[in-house]
Image (cartoon, rainbow, N blue to C red; front, side, top):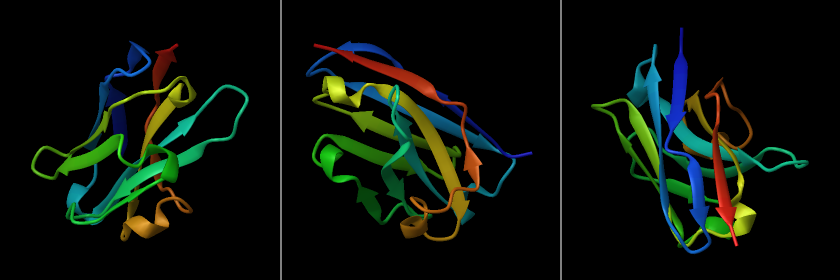
Length: 123
């Protein structure tokens, strides 16, 4: 059974940094594009970033460009999200996500979700 398990969420002040990690199991990790979504209270889940199977291509939502950085380690079956210059509007539950094939399709088609990890940014 495929499992995605997030960690690293927490409370941070505006302007601070946080690093999320997602550990995958039950799949051939290198066959899957990976990424992150987030959902704030009272809002729909939104796409944040995706990374291609070999890590060569990344796709960021405009509001996080220059602040967030996604990376993956196919030897460890992990994908991370480094978040810098955090803003209160980044407060949300962050979900790891994956799909077989290309990363450009992740924002539209997710096969597997993690359980989510809370990120709270105080002003």
